[in-house]
Length: 205
Image 1 (cartoon, helix red, strand yellow):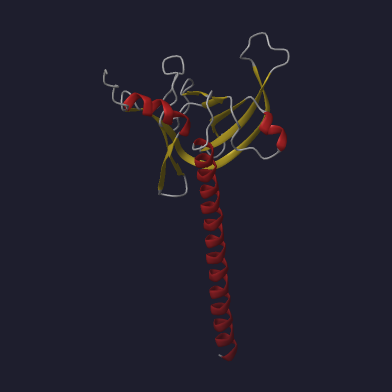
Image 2 (cartoon, rainbow, N blue to C red):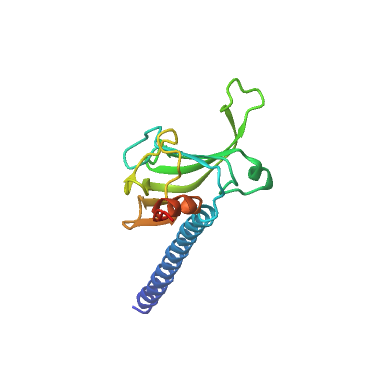
């Protein structure tokens, strides 16, 4: 009887310790996930709110899987999401969504591109680096606000709309998390152009 009681007590202690360890691991994983999301959003905000003139933005030219937007391509200016000095010298950056074969979820990948030295056309680019920045995504979509038509678009063609959008909206969710994350960013490069559009006409003397 005494041995059985000791075994019961030890089993209870082990169960509590194991539960505490599992809870600690879950909390640690949650903190890591929140930090990644926070850093991801901060990178976008810092980049878009200090965007210089002369940027060309293209989005949605290529459609991908359900729950995802087409690739986002940015040519010119400083490069976002750079993890070494060489990538700051890239000519363009592309954000693409890739379907993972095993897990069937999505990964957001950033590709830094450089104009090819052996290019046959002026817009031929070579990939110099590629890195997944968000994994395990269920959906990932961006939208762009056109200030003249006052509409949101899921794609952006610089030939039709050479002026950059005024806002960009990001909406994403993870396969293992029921929450949806949505953020809206102001694009600084558009401010002078929008201000000029809403200025009242100067009265005749």
